Length: 131
Image (tube, rainbow, N blue to C red; front, side, top):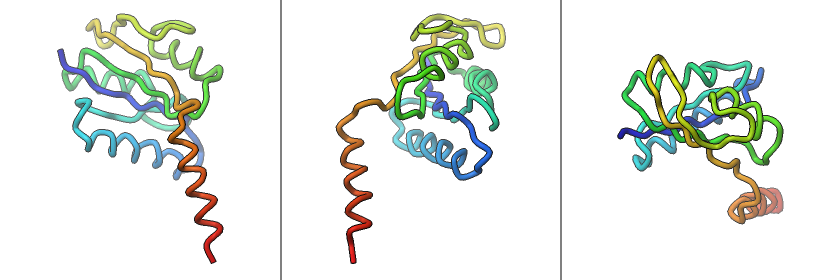
């Protein structure tokens, strides 16, 4: 079984927001731990979620781990994205048909209340405190 990761961003009219999600997917891919890693978006940017899944299947992936590039859980992460994945509202795993093939989809949690985020916030404050 070949696995891959689809990093899902919200999508934005602001190019730098799209570029951030793509850059994070590239960095995760460069770690080499998770197989193929690609970015996709809920709206406004390409590829959209179904296209991102299709690209992964085209490259031989049959287990797709989907990680929302969102800070907190909300309607998008609990309802909209699972529906786009073919899982249904609130579901986090299942088998779905993509391009005529059945693939396993496992949906990860958003960043949430992770203590590593506090370190990033503290770094931002320290940077502004410097003379």
